[in-house]
Amino acid sequence: MPRYYVNMLMQPDGLHEVHKAGCDRFPNFEDVLPLGEFTDIEYAVREAAKTFPQSAPCKHCSRVGVLSKTAHA
Ligand SMILES: [Zn+2]
Image 1: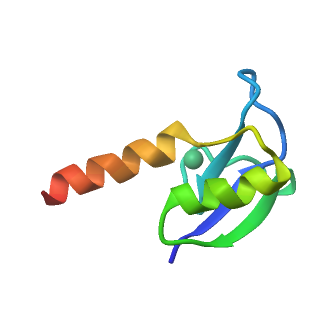
Image 2: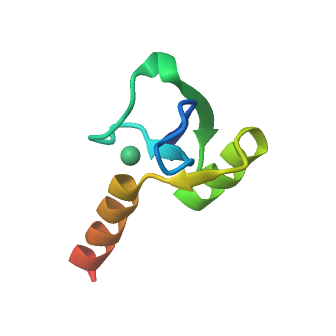
């Protein structure tokens, strides 16, 4: 299962982005909180929301997931 991390730094839109390990837009390691391993980013966001209620999946990670699903369809 992939590992997920939440950015402890708030984005300009007020959200804390949840990233999958290996994401191209991954923040600095000193700025992230490890969430653990999850089957889906949705579960990682729920875990992140316990610490940062305004958490959201990183658009880049999410887009990669959608694209790979489309490619295999
Ligand atoms: Zn990301």
